[in-house]
Structures are given as C-alpha cells and as structure tokens.
Image (cartoon, rainbow, N blue to C red; front, side):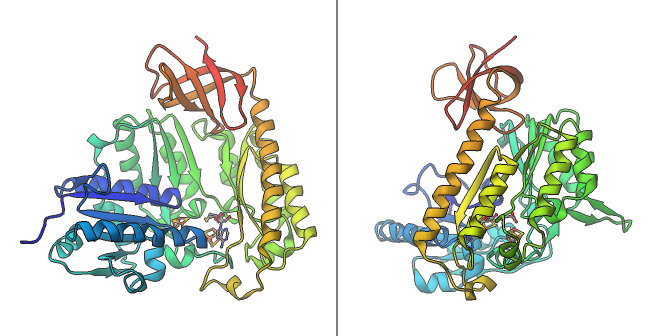
Length: 442
Ligand code: SAH
Ligand code: SF4
Ligand code: F3S
C-alpha cells in the first residue's frame, strides 16, 4: 500500500509572487484533503518554492535538499518537491543532481498539483515546466474562511518581456501575461469581504498590466486601479514592482486622484550611470527616471520612493558607481534594496567580464550606508507628526501592536484595545532606524 499524501510542508524563497503562489497552493489543497504540516518531520510532502534571481538564492535549494536526504533515509515514504523559478530554469537537471527529488514544477502549473500528487502517491516522479495558456489562479481558488488577514497580496500580472541583460525572470516566469480584470475584481471583493483592508497588487512588471476584454477593449493598469478603488471597504491599495518605462502620465496623475492609492512607489533604477543602464538593456536613462519622480512629487509631494540597485555590473567603474550614489542623494529613497551583481547562466550579461568580488562588496557597503542614511532621515522627518496607521498584527510584547504608515514604515505602539484591521491616528515619537514607535491619539 502506498502512503496517501495528507500533510505538506511548503517553504518559500524569493519575491512576493512566490509568497502569493505558496499561499494559494496551500489554500487550494485543503479541498483535496491536504493540510499544512507544522514542521518538516510531520509532513508527507516537502515542497521548496524557489528563487533563481541570484546564485546564492538558487544554491540554497541544494543545501536544503542535502538536509532532506537525511529525513528521507529515516522516512522513505517522504516525498520532496522543488517548484518555482529554480524548477523552471533547471527542470530535470534537479533530479539528476539530487535523486531525492520526486517532483519539479515550474511556476505556471500549480493548478495541476492535485493530479500530480496522485502520481507521487504511486511513486512516480514528475517534471512539469510547461507554460499552459490557462490562468493557474482560477483553479487555485481563494479559500475565504482561511484568510483572516488585514493586508493581502493579489497577483494581477506575471512574466516579463523586458529582458534586462542580467535577469532570469523572462526565462523563469515566461512572457508577460495579465489576468482578467473581472476575476481580479471578484478576488479583491472576496478578500475585502473576509476582512482585508489593504491589497498590494503584484506583478514582475505590474504597471505593464494590460488586458484585452471580450469587447476588444484594453483595460490598462490605470483603469484597473480605478475599478479597484471603487470597492467600498477596501481602504488602501499598493502595487509592486513597477518599471520606469511603464510609468505613463495617467498613472502618475492617479497618485493625485485616488486617495486609496498609498503615497509609496517602488520604482527600481538599478544604476545611476547611463552607460551601465544601456548595457543592462533597461530601456531608460537616468534623466528619464528623475523626471518621472519629479512629476510624481509635483502631484503628491510627500510620496515615498523605494528602489532596487545592482552594484558591480560588468564594466561599472568608480565613476559609474559614484553616479548611483548621486541618484540616491537626489531621490532620498525612503528605503531601497541593493545587490551585488550575480552572473546568471543563460542571460546575455553572463558573457560579459565579471568584476572582482571585493570591489563589488566595497561598493555594496558604501551604497547601503547611503541608503540607510536617507531611510533614517525619512523616518526622522515623521517624528512629531500624526500618521494614519493600519494595524496588521500583535507585537512582541503584551498590548503591543504593529502597523504601517501610508509610506510603508512599520510602526510599533501600545494599546489596551485590539486594534487589528483598524486605521488609527498615531503620533510618532521615535525611530530606531528600521521602525517607528508612537502612541494612539484619540
Ligand atoms: N521586475 C523588477 C525586478 C525583479 S527582480 C524590476 O524590473 O525592477 C528583483 C531585483 O533583483 C531587481 O530589481 C534587481 O535589482 C535584482 N536582480 C535581478 N537580477 C540580478 C542579478 N543577476 N544579480 C543581482 N541582482 C539582480
Ligand atoms: Fe528582470 Fe528587467 Fe524584467 Fe525586471 S524588467 S523582471 S529586472 S528583466
Ligand atoms: Fe526569484 Fe522568481 Fe521572484 S527568480 S525574485 S522568485 S520571480
């Protein structure tokens, strides 16, 4: 008799798209009698939802698989699956490199999991890295009873056609596809009906969203946001990640028109040097980027800007790097992510000459110091002000709650009443550089 798979342990790496996929997988398997295990040892199937963006992220998978080898020796019935972007990029190779793996699934086939699990139960190995045309999320339904959250992600677009020379996403997630606005609105309503107050729309290129409906009319990103803002009990709307090339005037104007659209924009530039941007195939210049931000600031002066940077891209000189620091000084990011360039097989920049790691490390350190300076400055500027804070969860200590300002800063405060799910006025008293603390003002 083969063992039925009843409990899964799902571990997620990478971006919010993976987090959202994992949540949907867990929710949708419930109706097939499969629930979440609280740890790896109690599970029948361990799934790693993986990220391929940098070498370090991808290699993590193999160190985890090394640990699972031992678990499998103790429990030969245990199944192990690798899904997500490493699965898409490496496919069958994963099983060749680590024979304990029973299942390899790319990001677009998760709706097939119930059938695939049946195959695993009869000891078949499964590799599926298709890009089917159907929308996986239509089958990976939301489970309303399971939500109980204040803030939620909602994927509206996947894939990328931009082909930055350093990036694996166009290969791991495939071509740009937008989901139907009807379904998005339905899912957003379901989230809101079950208590969600804030939705963050997700996409690798979220602002490239465009869907042609039955009447051959295009619903673009601005149209979609307007529709979503009409949902009564939805209080806040955000989106990540945007590409500068798709920041059109309508979208910029929207920040001055829709109150529910939070004054926060994650808009990666990657480098402050036009020479490097060109080699990266970003399709925009520094001047173009700065112009977007200055137009946005005219419309919504207090808007918080966040971004992503890569240091040490092939050919980057000290002068180029200095230009990246200059961009930070001009924009004064409220927060930003920065990475050392990691050459990825199969991408065009893999063929370019990599620069020494110690140079990259030095630049990363300098950039992070600069980013942190402006992040602290942004938080300092909020001290003494009263901010509308959406309370998301309880804090570490008794009567403590944690929420976020419209600008995304985490805020810690004390309250005797349960404030989760409410938007309350909070006077900001101090900052430790990462989060703010404040008090509820009635
Ligand atoms: N679609 C988003 C980014 C997705 S990947 C955009 O275009 O902005 C998230 C971030 O990882 C990127 O913004 C980039 O800063 C970083 N990244 C991507 N590939 C990388 C690589 N090969 N080495 C280092 N960082 C990388
Ligand atoms: Fe990658 Fe560039 Fe596409 Fe972003 S826009 S996902 S960095 S290829
Ligand atoms: Fe990583 Fe795939 Fe997201 S490569 S960053 S998990 S799209």
